[in-house]
Amino acid sequence: MKKIFLIILFLPFIQLFAQITISESDISSALDLDLQHHWDSNVPVTLGSAGTNRIWDFMNVQVDSIQMQKYVHSSSTPFASTFPSSNFCQRTINTWTNDTSYRYYHSLPATYAYTGYVQLGQGAPAFAKYASEFLLVNFPLSYNQTWSSSTRMKLTQAGQVYDSAIANVRVKFHSDGWGKLVLNSLGIDTFDVLRLRHNDTIYVTAYLGIFPVFRDTIRTINYIYITNNFGIICEIESKDGETNPNFTTAATFRYLSDTPVAVNEIVAKPPQTELLRNYPNPCNPVTHIMYSLAEASDVTLKIFDITGKEMVSLMNSQRKHAGNHEVEFDTVLLASGVYVARLSGVTENGRQFSTMHTMIVAK
Image: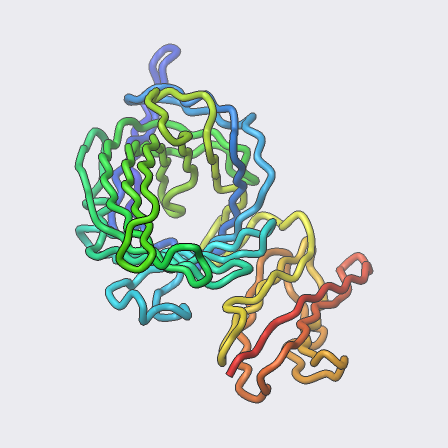
């Protein structure tokens, strides 16, 4: 990210914080960083006020669910061809539901735009694609800027009661404050941030064939807090229909809970060792297997068929540090069918573990 110009003036009982400016390099510096977020819904919050030299303290906000997030080049993802203008992708895995989302962006020196997303869950993938890129930020972004963006988005998902949905999106943005953000993050509790408020209005129409079968309007007030190196580190969304900018219950609250202290170095340890569902699943031919280690371990990762026959050994007693890991697996030598991925190993304290899940190869 662009270097912060930090000025601290020591006056009696007064300390000025750091006002920051966000540039395109702030976004691209997040590439390949493994970040962990905590997330929850219906969260009591005290938002504080807009302005300069503010302190927004969310240290005591309690959220339980975990998201693992990584920013990658769009070309490395399985849906890159659907969003040809995108060069930047935010991949998020929700560990409590084992679903994965890909949010595609177009990052340029002067602008940062949203092009669409893909949501992978237990059913068919859900696709959302903007008819024109949705402008999120003009760079450089600094305090007290205002702008508006609008676009039209088409949503499709096989197996739904409707064939498609069209969302007309209207958003008003205002970078309404800067100061200190206080979070319950491991290693770093206080961040210099720029606060961005956006008021969203989304008009949704669902269609069965060419006939509209459902209409709705969604209105929310949102706050995001942006810092150097890690970009957005906290997001707060109001309930639908909220009109009070100082609302006291957030529909969703998400914050960065584990942060690298340097590029590709992870400070925090996941709360448990687990093997996450691969993506995409079903796969053909390449899939990605994610796993988390609560402590350094000697790890073995193997693929079996449903009779228990070992098909592929991806790792055999390899030493891995505590944190989040990913293995790319090319299934070219496997026939179509159901397989079992099994992660096992021994921690540095001698504790053995084993966890597994099924995966589908479809050719």
